Image 1 (cartoon, rainbow, N blue to C red):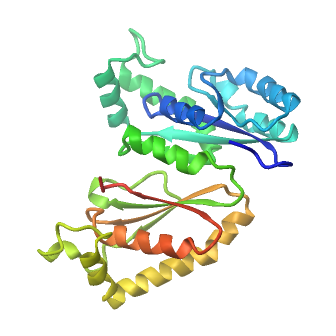
Image 2 (cartoon, rainbow, N blue to C red):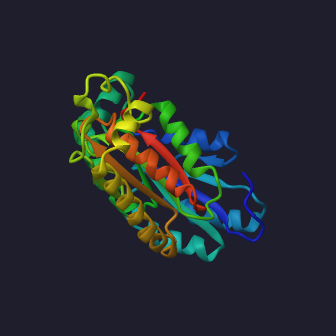
Image 3 (cartoon, rainbow, N blue to C red):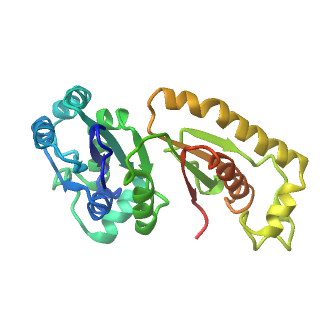
Length: 290
């Protein structure tokens, strides 16, 4: 990846819970041309930033930071980021998370040892302790990705779509989901479309999704759906420029319905078509669709 001439060199700090996909995220960035270092001690982050500033060039960098750092080191992250900025380095934090039950299942399936677990600390307690340790990093994150419902392939695609371009404007991820599968915890805005007519109750529409023409036609003919879709687009038109002025790089907008198959998918597709008329970077994720 090439950084435009005159723009700050870029450093992505990848952190998060063990088992949430940090290694996959770093490997994806490395495959995309980033120079990556895993498990870098926080104490060396400033020195590494100084090395990048002194080296020059157009390389983009990524480092992995985990809970093996001491809490006092992790609490220095905001000050370190300020210092990196003064060195002309555009640093951003990507934090990967997942529900505790999912992390427990992943460690059980892989039989890997959690970095904070030992004979006196069972896995469940290690996950809780790690979450507490990483709170200062998560609080400063520019983007949080919850991988509870995300496959490795989906995570790789998400990292490539959202992080491997040089951010020159706001990157907006639009996500559909089903409330019966849980509300996404990494969304900045969540909209509930369960008040709208449900194609699920039409036997001929049930096998289809909101991307299919029969369902699209059914929903487009509803004045209530048209009003919801129009007002959702107007809300984004009003507020996305405000986030851009605050120098936000990433924003996630989620729309949910009961099962995440019809109404939410239709609304996300319509919103994406609307936003793509602007210069925003827009990506779509339908969480419940294959």
